[in-house]
Image (cartoon, rainbow, N blue to C red):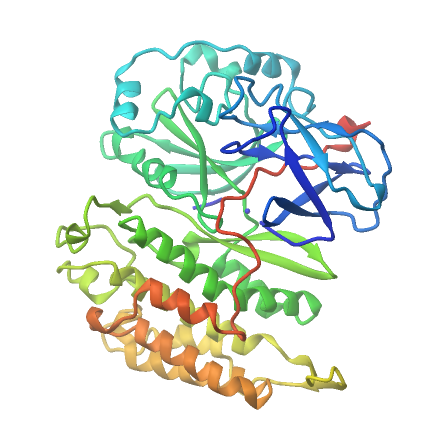
Length: 504
């Protein structure tokens, strides 16, 4: 469905609350330089790195104590309306004011005042169900986006008290609508599910149950939920510009520097997705629906003139979590997307974690085909940094189109990867050959190793597929398909830019 990351920067900020610690607090840094928000970056030790959305911006404001947006703090009873933070380690004397939820002008004052009001939650059947699922955190730990807690029930007459401002529609299905919304100045994705007899709220809330137990930088975050009429709305973060299919399509279509930047990030997706799937599997969880539409890509911004993109796994609607390792292999009927499903899933036979490996192998096959297509001009440098010049590479074949055609290489019209394995294997081998041909010979063996790994992921025998842990270890040592520079912790919330009329 729908739903956005991290870059390094020369400016390091250390954020500490007046109570000297925000351990466990999720902050929404909203530092503004010339009305441009600073984007959150990777962390090293206690320091946090940032980069400005406007590299040319200069501001020398002298304020030292700034207000940031926090949803909760284990060490303070204050909410995100009043939390304070002190900034340290500012280089070049750059200081500027920040905005908080209380001062942001993103919403009408009536909504802002409604958020400030608080009430004790009612003991309803739905509230008790959420408590049974262990979804209600202790008050100091919850993301109190609404002023009434993390999970809220709004009555029909309380529509004007929902502190969300709709921005635009992101996508829809027969049962759900996904929109981008603002909660103060934080841009969120709202997935509104129409709960009827065929899809009960008790079933729809399972996605929240999984996401609340999976805190990882490459996994979509759940901010909270609320019910209104017959609908269940799930608030998610971040909002992404692409899913993997639209990202790769745009990467192939652009014949300019943007395509090169996208390709640089796409080579990192292999390691990032392997790492996040290992994290999911360590939590005894099966995703069960890994496919390009459920992998989001967020445009992070520029660093050193290179645009950075981050990959995020989404849509845990049919995922399953288990209490013990011996429970992971199951044979009960499940929903699936046939194109990317493992053969044992399509047969509804006994299946385990390796079914997710097969589906991710289908995703990797598409990544390799797109990477083999993307470059027509590439600058190469030897180890001494001596410039060799521009070398043109015109692909002899359209790997992206050939991979799609290979999925219809059987007499039954079955477009799934598992039904066309031989043709898919050939496409992967040819794509990796063209990728290796564009780079120095030192990368030939590395590309061949990646080819062999992806082929093993698509093995029709689940026992012969690699584990997510072994895949993560492989890419951790793979310099040609490197990891991104982000940490494994979920990203702090990033405030959206201030509208010009509000900034004035």
